[in-house]
Length: 217
Ligand code: SAM
Image 1 (cartoon, rainbow, N blue to C red):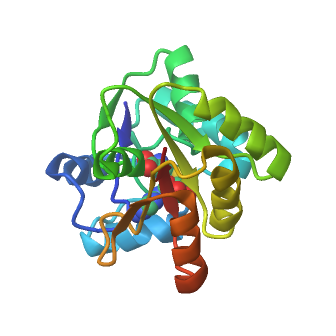
Image 2 (spheres, protein in one colour; image 1 turned 180 degrees about the horizontal axis):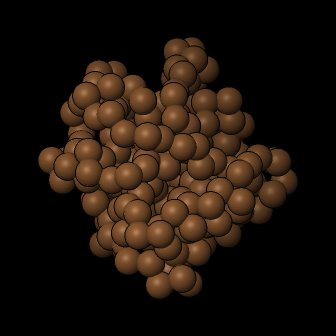
């Protein structure tokens, strides 16, 4: 069986009893980054074999893991943070397992997307998840223009080295519209700023915060 297991997005306490039970019971844990996941496993004294399953080995490794599952073994699939399958190589294994009739389940838990959506205070009854914005300016501006036409809340992920450029484009396209930018979700310095792109830009330019961001538009 393939157990897709959600893990914390920052606060190690955000792991369910069921997730821990599964991680203790499987034959193998497939991790995006074994060193990263070892921090969590060591914290909870979970001693199980791990293997790396990441962006660059996702096709060959998914086949290898499928072979393992076909032998009747149990695998837990975890990502670096949050729910596997959302913007990580987990999708490739899940899809391959479905096509090969492998039984699977998801042990639910955190996802940065949901925390940011709820904390943004934007309507959550209808929303669009846009993943990461394109890295190149022109493509990003086109994407933002497309997203601006949607009549619902839009959520996107952004890294610390592109947040300023993205906010500059948002200022150009959204004007003074209030957006929300969340960072360090579930961590000690969790912060959600609800303001216009310009105000958030100025704040970030001064404070130069690190970490990763989720933007709600
Ligand atoms: N699978 C993950 C999930 O369920 O949230 C998302 C993986 S995606 C590769 C990583 C992105 O999620 C980061 O670049 C950032 O935008 C967002 N993210 C993850 N943890 C976060 C946190 N604690 N605070 C803010 N954003 C976070």
